[in-house]
Length: 353
Ligand SMILES: [Zn+2]
Ligand SMILES: [Zn+2]
Image 1: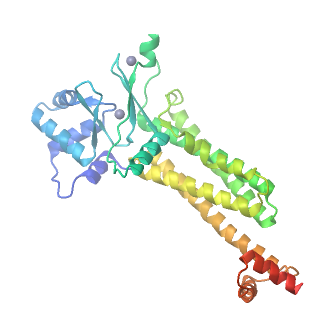
Image 2 (image 1 turned 90 degrees about the vertical axis):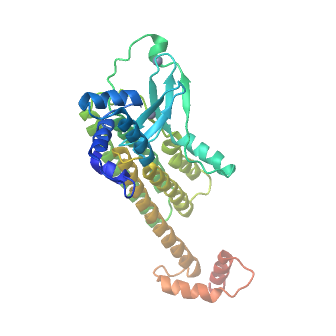
Image 3 (image 1 turned 90 degrees about the horizontal axis):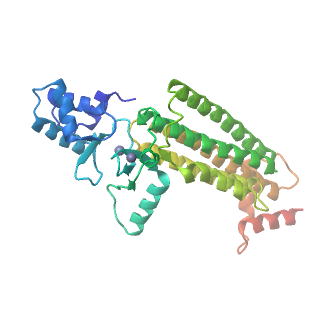
């Protein structure tokens, strides 16, 4: 993972000069969490080094915004605040009007909807801001929040693991069901193998989750940051539903599995790439890789199954036909114009029988 200085190097504009004062300011800024006003940063910096002028700090803040190291947030109270993007993905805010505290969250469902709207209106978005104003739980109840805050980076990693675990669980349910449905023995073995793999991934993810929460005992009590409802519940759950439809056999089950894995792969890859460098990003990208492997395996199996079923239809009495021979026979029956491929194969076998 990138260190703060590597992070700065990555974001330094081409030809951008190094300056020790600026590097110092950036370094102090990256050590802060939450949302910081420009004046608060001035105080922090000048406490450490009184020779750095206010103007230099303001200029550096603007430089960080331009370089993508800092994000400027406007909570509508006439004061800009800044937050850094180091190991800190972009997000939306809940803002309490009473205590002025802000709380961060991210939702893939909302982001997808925003993209859908922009696409429908042929609009190219560069930034989406979503802010919910109101009264926080503490201000409503009068009870102090006694849970110590932990860095958002850890909450993000925890939630990324939760999303991956939920997806893995519904993937497991999907393959177990598909294995029960499959008539083709090889197809069944593929589903059983995938179910076993999902089970193994699941235990790895759960071990990682335990490790993370044991290292930071306050982590479990933190409010949710990621709201990825349709992603973690929807991708394979819809597939399980489809498997229950009448007449679904191995071939159709493979096709549904391919669709689920492809959607899952694309989702985790897309989000992983959009996140800032962080443990959560890594969890998403590693999970995307696993989903891609499953997707590729299912595609290979689907092709093999289609070839087996074709050769079975063409040569009903031979069980050991090679794919080359099957192709030759199929080609021979092709000239029957006006028939579908299945019809041609069925007609061909009738003639020979
Ligand atoms: Zn409040
Ligand atoms: Zn924020």
